[in-house]
Length: 258
Ligand code: PGA
Image (cartoon, rainbow, N blue to C red; front, side, top):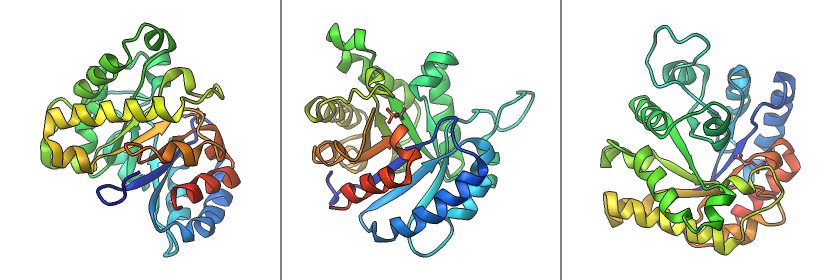
């Protein structure tokens, strides 16, 4: 983390879990537990149907808790049965949206071109895009991780003007570490985050690169959070499994506030 230049962000990704009732209970606990979290922003990305309940639950003076969605469509409106637009997300109370999560790339064949359109659409509204990139185990073993991650970053940010970059968040999530209990070592994660920052520096210059928050995601938990967050280029976490449990999520928030 480097709090001097950029925000620390702890983001939860509930995926397709929890009920609306769970959401209410979770947010009322989170509000209290997060009251002491002075040094980080907290974002909880919930299923579409839970956004309104989460947004109501996140209101209050005690902490900066934001609600996010896990996907969005890039069009403003139209014949896209089953899809949700950025404006709809905002209306439901979302302030952020995860874009290009590896599960969407894998199970729903989401492409880098679509990811890019979604990023541009989110920025056109006032949503904060949390853009996910990361390599497979095969890629890591073949030594192409950095090339791959650089390509994903470049494609996701294609056409994003420099003055909008301050709203962009990047999450480095090695696919082999997601939901597997197998975390990247702090060195591996820190190195990839550094490569991403260097890539942004090449695209937008040193000042913007220094100000971008880069998160790590992939089996982050209360035990490994402090070490991962101690890496200079890792500015927070995108947490799946451990974000479902308020005690564990709060412990990670505490680690980010040390
Ligand atoms: P995990 O998921 O923490 O359960 O590995 C992270 C993510 O997919 O964002």
